[in-house]
Image 1 (cartoon, chains in turn purple, brown):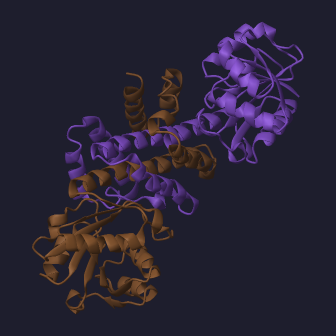
Image 2 (cartoon, chains in turn orange, red):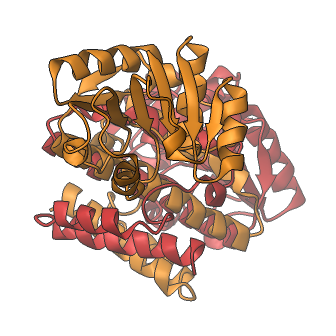
Image 3 (tube, helix red, strand yellow):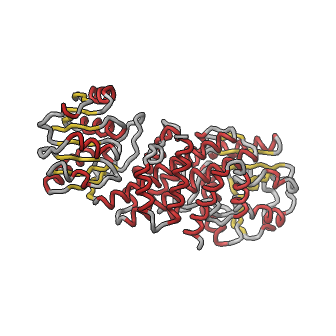
Length: 256
Length: 256
């Protein structure tokens, strides 16, 4: 399989490095910023491009690892590529975005959060695949299997829902970490003191459901503490609002 | 040090087990439910009580590991105990709750989430201590040092703020896990597919600040995806409200 990679951002970098390590050949890397394409291409012995017309015509698989809204624009520029399997990696983009552009297309969605500065072990990441044909599916399965030991099929609707679940479980969670770091800072204590708690909260899910793992003043219906917390947040009405809404949501699910 | 433990709940059990393992002698365990006191006392070779008047008068240290609002009531029943060091373990209760009841009193607050079903390594848990006298402080430091390698002093105001930070970093975070499990369930996918993502989100904080670790549609200001997520949540107005508020909060901190 001769692969070209469209994109050189966080996900593209992690994907390219993982595939390269497994012996996959990525021949070209495209980014509209040549320097980004070059930086990634150098790591995996590929050619860097900032012009889609220079894509090798013998490419078997074209992987789009770009932001959601860039996919339709890039396809427009690229035109029809009947001989290539087109794959995107986006949680919220439907499979049929490719319909007008090839006979064979698929999605390969790794359910993970990628930051450039942090290396990641791809093998444990759940990868969700979907394809428009048996041929596309089997090729995509092969590719996904090189990356991860945890490959499943999911249709576009399931994938969208997964992406939404991931926003709650990861993006919003990380934002709560940021808010809590502002609170430790206000107490002149380093954020690091929260790390064992944060790790244990995530780790508990190995043995308990999140429902059974719930602790804290809301689930104990401890109004004195909740009221005192609201007072402590008097100068942070934004945090008060979140505190109220999240506590109500816990109470609704545990006590009503 | 002859120790008595008031309480037999989650925190009391973890504390008692950890102290017992380190060779500390807990002679009595009190709970208003005798069966609870007995179950814990059996594990650590202590005497079980459900009557405070039976507390041994030669007890050096009395540790209260009970819910916040139970502390004043128990102290009332107990009366003045000038010869004992009184210690509580609550995030949101001030040190001076003990003022009328002894000459020496302290707080030993382990910043962690405790569930009965899950054993825990106490040594990495940050423990925050505060005391009213040098004598009380040095005894409490000794006790805390047996439990944890990470002991710090913090006053009552800092401890309250820490507890509040912990509600955001742990209790609210865990609730987001529960909400995300409802979303995977709705997609007929097992919650377990989110676990690598959840672990990585927590793990990232070893190398990145939560601010730098932020990913997702809000921090990319991706309105198409956010609007689609709001549509997907049409039948869950409670989740829509949280989605909106948390996304706004991310945008405020990253883009404005």
